[in-house]
Length: 400
Image 1: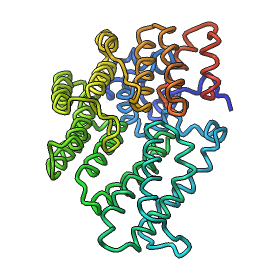
Image 2 (image 1 turned 180 degrees about the vertical axis):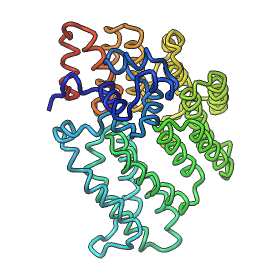
Image 3 (image 1 turned 135 degrees about the vertical axis):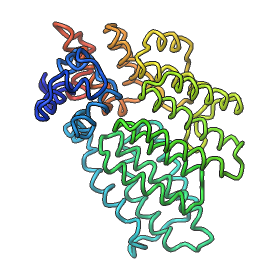
Image 4 (image 1 turned 30 degrees about the vertical axis):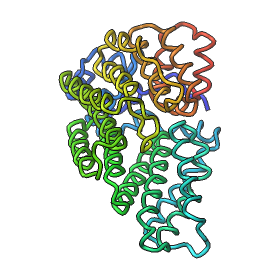
């Protein structure tokens, strides 16, 4: 179902601002932004960055997903993804119910191979593949964990932890953040059962992302500090696996610091990440499903500059960034989305549109359900008397 011209994040911010009896100046002061910024966002003439959305949501006492208009139900129905949410929710409720008498688990090596495929599809943003297979796999793994001998439970717990990670990715990317929070809690529980500090650390990394979307940058950084402590407990803290996880935590710290508008802290975290990548000596795209290396450091340098509003600096850093062929599509797609937002904020409509098309080509399901894509398209459309054919096609594709 197409959305009206008034159905955009700025209009929703204006609605909630009026319900809270706030002026634009009052909202701006409490959120720590300028009144002009609020006015442009409410008019739909400037894209709302994630830090601004988080700050405004906190002041208005409303969830970020509400301001973003997520989940996008019409598009989920068109892609037959909406019917996958209830089975996944049911599967997440099985965690403490013991074995299902109607399920006979396959050998663990076959189940683990299926989970690895789901993890790969999560990195490739293939949500439909995950949604059709994950609920049954969670039921099988939950039963296996309950019936297997104690000697096999640690490995089974790790496999189940990764299955919960894919549940988190699926729910979070489609806008079901409450369900994603539940999946993340289940992931942490299984990581403890697996006695795997790296898996626990990655769970904290995603927990920090959930905190950032609520504007809780200081708390996110505390969670990341805890994650670094867990990496230090690994039996081989200088292994490639541990270094890759540590590097992703440094990059997450850079984004958290950027949301807090702390330039020096951003530089510090990026410096730590760069030294970690040098210690590894190469990009590692799939270690612990945590892509890390110099390419990631360059990407997050661009992303943090965009967050900070240093758009010229972001463009300069982007000129030297080349993604390897095996780089996760999730990351490449996200980069093009960030660049589209940056170009839109700079008034470069054609470059922004080209970046959006790139995001669609690289990771179509990610782009279709990403709030920044919709917000950037909406801003570009409203800035023109007549939308170019390519932009109009993008707007129809995301359901606008």
